[in-house]
Image (cartoon, rainbow, N blue to C red; front, top):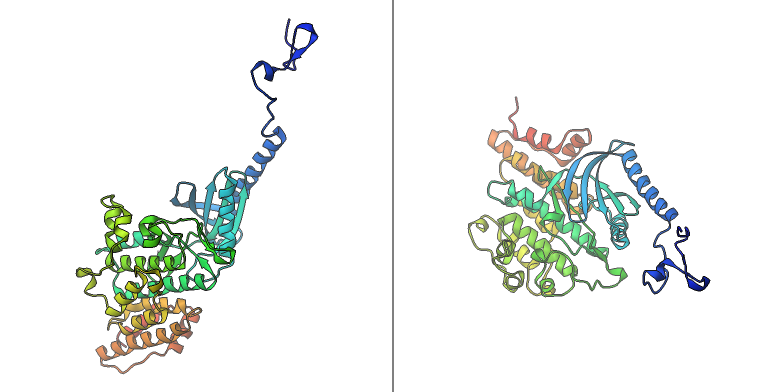
Length: 393
């Protein structure tokens, strides 16, 4: 005799015993997800993938992490190059973190902070669409240099941009909490810098962040010892990036921690020193600014003055105009957010012009208004500076 289709077996005395009781279960199991809901989830995921495919053409991979990947893509609507940061996870909290990053970045507009464009989410997937920045992170940039570091005249404008970005964040009560070489992008011509990866950033208007986070190797000493990252920890991280940029090494001998020869905790208790041949060509003013960032006592820290960094860039210009084109263009990029940048770019451009004129024995001067008119008409600052350093026919 075959069993009824319900899975209930007739028992003696006419009573039926449900299958879940015969399997020794204490209660009837409930389905975790109805078939209709399962189909709905699958359809949402397919719609998400279809939307991404319909709106963007993937060009290639930019990076891969443990939970997300970043791809270079082109938006079909206008041909704009973008970066697609895709997170694949079934955890709704992780998707919420990605959306929070998008909403936070939307509230921040600064030339040295990566700009968000769109957010697409579906069950199991979240895609953050950001502006595409053609460059390499600080660590890769330094590896590409013969001496593993940048000369001061190139480093100063970049540090001014990083300092300006962090100053802007703190003015808006936002703490990044994970500033490190991998989250600082530099253009291949050394003219522009972008701060990226805000997935652990926190807005202080929502209350103090109590959870320790970030990357311990690059964290401030108090964070390594268990405190929650705060704005003063961001300042330490700016100093660390500056120290690395100019010397090719991490402060406190933390390079040894990277190779597991020492613990980060033991390194974090040391004072920061600037010794060795790599520091002989760095100005005292620059070294003092970096040491203030890297003070062991958090309350003694201060961001480098963007104005002083830019002024020193103008003052330490050499006679070779071409060598400082990157510095001039970096100053112009900061002009919308730093009033002193426009004035200093004029001074630097004039000093390059005067030095070139002295070499050629020709009294020439180039005024900033001329260079501005040239750049507005499509001629780059590089062309103006190059023209200033080449002999007249």
